[in-house]
Image 1 (cartoon, one colour):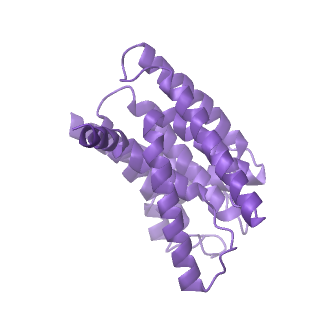
Image 2 (tube, helix red, strand yellow):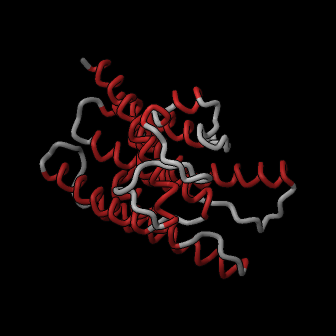
Length: 261
């Protein structure tokens, strides 16, 4: 039954990934994600249902629109496959537990905002702020119902603490280097992460900063970019959040056990 549920989560993740692709394209362009069928962004031809099957259709069409032959970005199957994999992994880690539901929501939102941030260098308020509210309410409710371990107040403390921490870092960076390093979208994303992760947001932020530093260094060396080149931080925050969601709390417990021995 448990293994079967993980398979269902993978298939469900493929469908959600297809929807996230639509959101990543439409939200920053202020197109409704509720009304209107999928269409080719080049020729605007509506995409038939059999050409909109996650992963399979892209491979069958060899990455091109059936109507006009325009290339279809490989980010579409990547998002679908990544969403399915992380949905399955989340259920494997959380099990058939109520906390899996907010965690699946967090995964979906992290994927879509990372996709948008990579292309537009923005993290839309319309996505991240309602998610933060839902996450905070959900985790507090689960704590009060004794369904999830941890005092209820750790979630708002983690949410606002993470946001304040990133805000201070951004302000210091801008005042020292006279260059905007992080935007308020990153701060709001930290708020959302803390709302879902609680104390695990601490290793999430650490992982994000390390990954961002390594990624920036690779970009500078590989492309000959300058140290002032803008790099979207949202995907690194998302990476840190997902890793911490899976192993953050055990890592904190192991560290505390080590230092208190």
